[in-house]
Image 1 (cartoon, rainbow, N blue to C red):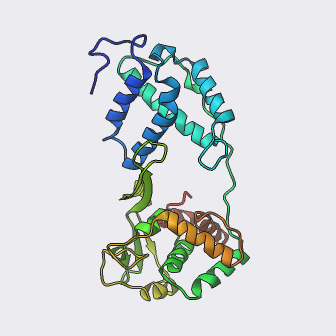
Image 2: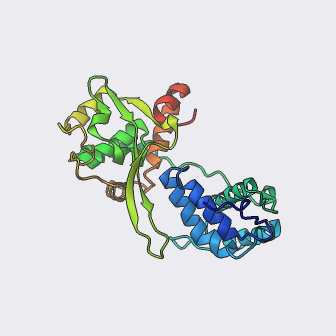
Image 3: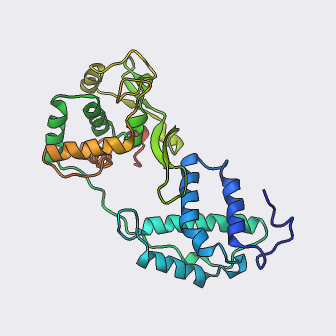
Length: 297
């Protein structure tokens, strides 16, 4: 790794692209792969094209502010809409991280980040109504397969989509009536080209609290037993070790199911919010809810 101090460079002589490359090299082994790929993508798509030819001393509050203003007005996401304030703040986060690294190398950025963050309005979480929940459960119970069973698991336990896709039979303890959450699955971009290649990865959950044990009620356990598999390392959704179902595919299936049973086509994550809402309505003890569902109390 190049050392900007050792080479005698200062904020007026070193360029942002040089410092950014150093930071990426430093971060590759410090961050989780998912975080690193996200930050690397932001760096190559937004920050390097905007600031790569700037010297560190030129990165003023006004300069960076104009860049963020431009993003709010002109830049489009992959669905054709404007970038959300949340995503713009993610871009700013990566830029801020490079500034911290640069400052530690003796080349502080001259911009003031206090004036640059984007206001993010808290959105109300979408949940299925009691009528929609009843219709969905009734639909899933008919001609049930592994995918429908997986969605029922999420509905009754608050599991995340990635956790369901990574779930293996070794994570289900029939005798103890427990479901262990220890991994999650996601698809990551591996290049920064116009049409990036992607890959599926299975990693530990994002936070230590996400590793948890969920008690399974008897009625749910009985349904799970119908799909039991002798191969403990087999994926729950396929019953095979050599075949998986990725989150994107499960999301498509879920949207198809909601359409077929005549309810709103909410995102898969709405199952988790619905689970939490129903627990609160039943006066479930919030600390216990947080412990086994990883939903903040």
